[in-house]
Length: 599
Ligand SMILES: Cc1cc2nc3c(=O)[nH]c(=O)nc-3n(C[C@H](O)[C@H](O)[C@H](O)COP(=O)(O)OP(=O)(O)OC[C@H]3O[C@@H](n4cnc5c(N)ncnc54)[C@H](O)[C@@H]3O)c2cc1C
Image 1 (spheres, rainbow, N blue to C red):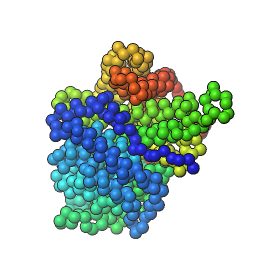
Image 2 (cartoon, helix red, strand yellow):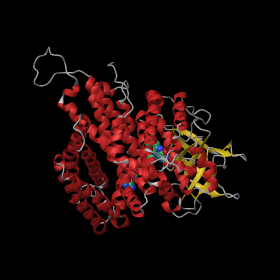
Image 3 (cartoon, rainbow, N blue to C red):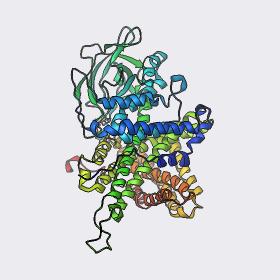
Image 4 (cartoon, rainbow, N blue to C red):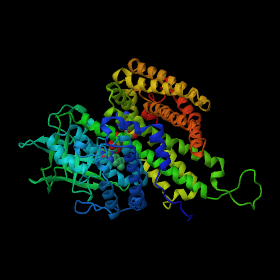
């Protein structure tokens, strides 16, 4: 076996600082009173701590966790000591409460910083990070919709890291179509509910990492309206709480099986059964039948976090294959005909540089997009200006399915390129790149598949509020193009991006009209292609933002790399997106009219 490059925690700190403080100006968020308790040094200190914990406790056991043989024994699942150690370090450093308000016991940090720290943890060991990610999402949901008692009883211990959370939506027969769930919640005389039914694929619903597990469960009340309008949300804890507020009696929710998976194997995945003994206690959150709206609060956050996790894997894979390509000697330059001259590192071959540049463009472009979305979350939370808060929310609505999908789908390509760069060695478990690729493969599936995100974008989001979110996006792109036009180095990129945004506007109008004239089956048949084209334009926009900063900065290797990646993205990726929009504009009926029998 070849010597393996050291696993550094990705992304390199220079990259994260560039994106956070030069492209996004995260320090400006500290002018808002909501973040006024922090200064730039605190933000840098949070990132330092994330890098320290990630490199000391997360990264070293990522490969071990991938093959850890989790087993269901007497209804419980034991986890390795290394996972407990990593999770404890994370909790003790306060990361669980990073984005919660001070009143809720949190640090009230900008989401952009917390998201950047999350990327560091995810790149080091995504499976280990998933337990915290689910807990934070569940606690955010209760912060928004729980009553005082629920917040004290269930949310506060999650922020403290004593209880962990899950989201329990999917059932064996209802994954994408949650309106078809059948888990039933029957009112009980004491005001609580008794649940019966079964959930499939529930991550982290059993482990020994916390005192209790708070499952947030979608279920239906007897006689509820059909479809998503009849879904309610319940807290279903692993342990019920005694008079002193301590976890006591085991609730009647049992793990009846573990699902074994291609990737993200360190996240325990369960089949959950409610009410085998008729005594599964649940507590209604908010009003009956309001569960989907509430759960969307968690799902939207989770969707951006999935995109961030995907970007983290892309960055880790890129960092590894880049180091490898600089170390691995193989072959000679094309012009060197002397078989006795020493071999060159493979990074000297143009085709290897092509793959590395493609990886860089996807990894750092996806990172820029997800950090921008977190920045919008901060503006929507803290801006003085109500119209800026509204604009941030509208833009976030449109960008959420894109931020979830683009780094995930294109991440399959970019992590696969990492395997290609390592050649045969990349295809073995002796190197981490095949794990990154396996882990990445989940991201287009969970939290709503790519197909569902495409329908959400074209069927709903670009139409919502009279198309206001889409218009905000287009205006922002054209404004940034105008601002960059006087930079000669970016003339080609500005022209191409402006043309692509105008093409997107025209094709969107045509597809929206087709929804009315030809119906949704025809107009939405290729929503996934639309999502990909829109996503590529959004990432090209974030590349232009990076290139603008790089063009005005000293001409060093870091900035030269940014300019090259932006140019690559526009020439190779943006042109592909425009070609795809051109095809979409024809309202091609090949797929929609294809009979299943012909397949
Ligand atoms: C490892 C893992 C972890 C998970 N963790 C959780 C969790 O913690 N909590 C939870 O609740 N769920 C979880 N899930 C479930 C996940 O959200 C679902 O797998 C996902 O929503 C898809 O549902 P499904 O598997 O039933 O596939 P299906 O819904 O059967 O979809 C199969 C295919 O059909 C397509 N399709 C379905 N309906 C449509 C449509 N209307 N239009 C176009 N295409 C369509 C889909 O895009 C997909 O390609 C997890 C899944 C996995 C694999």
